[in-house]
Amino acid sequence: MDRAPGTPADAAATLPADLTDLGEAYEVIARFRPDAIVHLAAIATPFSHSDAVTFRTNTQLAFNVCDAAVALGVGKVVLASSPTVMGYGAPGGWTPSYLPLDEDHPVLPWNAYNLSKVVAEETMRSFARAATATKLAAVRPCFVIAPEEWEGAPTQSGHTVTERLDRPEIAGVSLFNYIDARDAADMLLTLLDRMPGLPNGEIFFAGAADALAREPLSELLPQVIPATGGFADTLTGTAPAFSSAKAGKLLGWQAKRSWRTELS
Image: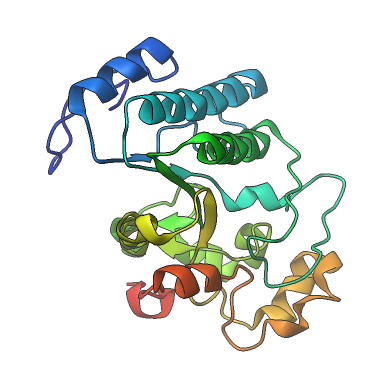
């Protein structure tokens, strides 16, 4: 379902709809009667719209999809959240409680985008506490890199992958996190498969098994974010700053691709 008309290649079917309208959300879900919903629709980047529009759009989408899905008996719902809920990049400074970051780390939103993602997660959890026939979860996928971006196309930040590696200040603000788009899709499919056996309302990070950096983060991260200096010692070798250990433990999932093998 998308506000934009037309059916993308390889899609079974699409229906143009504005899911910020609760009535339309009910109508399209009732029409398709899906077994599962992966909710990706959102304003996807901070500061690309006004704060009011970003917050209103993303939170309304999350509520409407959860409300309609639960009411109409959809069995599984997965919402896309964001690692930005951790609060890195805050103008007033940011210090982690520990590294690597995991799902138990406190969220510290500071802008409309990451605040909207925190609210979306809590919206999902509230429906999970009340739902009896629907399993819900949220995923925080790291910086997604598509196959064409390994070949030199600009990433969502406007820089190439090589530029992000060559200029640590670009990727450093987000702690050098990333995931290959195919690994992200595989994680979602694995989660959908395993959801019947999971507690309702779980949240997962999904990231590559290494950092998008040529140097160990124990050395590099404090250069970019000095406040991490007392915590980054654990990030030796190629270890990333975001842990996907929970996904490994509960889902048996681990990212397969690395920039070291994919970059052209």
